[in-house]
Image (tube, rainbow, N blue to C red; front, side, top):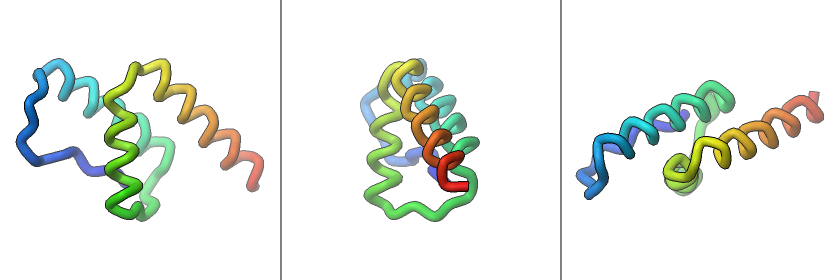
Length: 69
C-alpha cells in the first residue's frame, strides 16, 4: 500500500490533491500488498504524471493480475 508523502516539498496544493487521488487509484488496484521503499517511491513519482498515463499503467496491472488467475 502506498502512503501519502509527508516530507515538505515545493509543490502546489493542486498537485498534492492530484497526487493523492492518483495514490488512491493505485491503492485500490494494488490492495494491501507490501511494497519496498523503492517501489513505493517509484509509484509516487508515477502519481505526478497525467491521470491518463496512470490509468494506462493501472490497466496493464489489471491485465497481468487477470492473466495470473
